[in-house]
Length: 284
Ligand code: MBD
Ligand code: FE
View 1 (tube, helix red, strand yellow):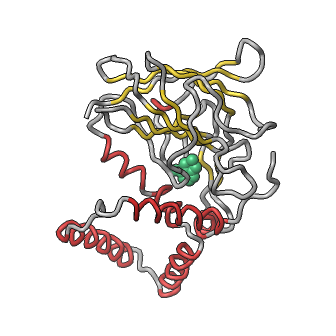
View 2 (cartoon, protein in one colour; view 1 turned 135 degrees about the vertical axis):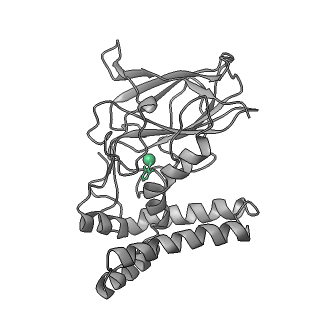
């Protein structure tokens, strides 16, 4: 691959924290400022932690280790990573459990808005000699009643064959493996990309320290991220996965669902793979 070494945790973490802060300030006014909800939720969270301290007889050494670790999460910019890996899947479940269309999955910390547009049958931006197995990804966007959604807009972003995301790891072109397209008149698309590698949580930051200290593994299975927009329909945020990945069954971010598994086939040309997947959106 291009990079022999992983980006420092504080590099990707700091960038993820900055991007998140920018999006929050752009969307200001949408924040949760309902006193009753804050009282309820913060009160329950604090009580849950106090209950654990009493039940497990947490010591001063353990309490101080926690304090030092929480400070380090902030210093490393890893709050977006921590929260998206260990909590977002439950938020996503609550937000989408009424849906009849496609199952979704978490957004994660590495989404960037306004990626460059490519044609519905184009190629996602990539380096001239981008490593990785070529993957032709085709499908259709439909409403739950089967109507093709010809005004749908699809955003795709994913890691490279080293497991690194552009804009969050050094030395990768800004929009590498990030793009947006509008489907054709029948809701179809056919996009060329490459297969991403599995993603490993940085080992040199606070999240990596927790994983090592707890004896966990640090892996997410290889995945493609999508946002699918269509007028009058709920936004679908999803990830798609590849069969046979050793971490499909124990994703550290708990974000794999059986409905999100791809079935890639060797291309007839003998070079790369083809895969088909349709997105079904719920009317608003
Ligand atoms: C990722 O690439 C990701 O998708 C999530 C959810 C968390 C960490 C890294
Ligand atoms: Fe990801």
